[in-house]
Image 1 (cartoon, rainbow, N blue to C red):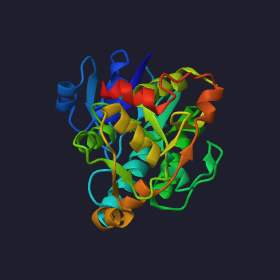
Image 2 (image 1 turned 180 degrees about the vertical axis):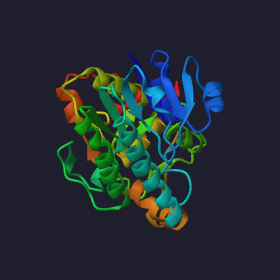
Image 3 (image 1 turned 120 degrees about the horizontal axis):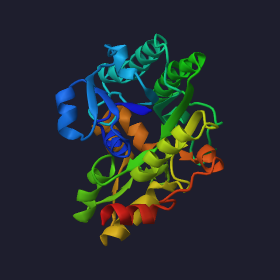
Length: 297
């Protein structure tokens, strides 16, 4: 049996595809997929235009990662609409297509985010914690609701609530490295807000672990078991790079330059991977220093 991936050319998708045996990858431009990824079968797909049902033949697991990036561009009303629509409509159309299959896949692993919980200060958050009420919370609630409809088709649904993903070739870390290497890195706002992070290798392994563990279903927090404050993260990154971290980016400056998205950087989410840990997943990089040393080296 095979796997199918949407959003396979993104940062997380590229790492996942490397671990799969000749998966089917769906995207807007199959030619671009073949240029970026090896040993895959590529087909055209967009959130508003589902592919032919034939591409799902012999597919056992679907990894649904596609969606408009929340990090690129200022959050205008148009941008926010694209973020919501790409996730909600895309997932809805995917599940509707799965409902037409004579033999649907057994598992759907749908990407979500710890943005589901909203900013919660120092409060410990697990998969059983309630949702927040800000924009990203509303996106995640609607997104997960569409994915969960696949349960009615007899498909096991896993909702992977991802934290800050650290990798050397994508995600947040490369954007941080340049100012820190120049000695002008520093904390954001007060630095007391919690950051729930995860090494890209652990995130991919959790996805594969969830795919192979029948008892796992519903929300799963894709974070390491040791969230840190922004101040602690800054100090750890500076130490690994052997650079000072004396500067601070005031919160009001972020709000002027980034608008509403600044609230994501200044908000605090102290999230723990309770479900993955209880199911027996063992982290390769449970502590931040080890993760950063691996990626920076």
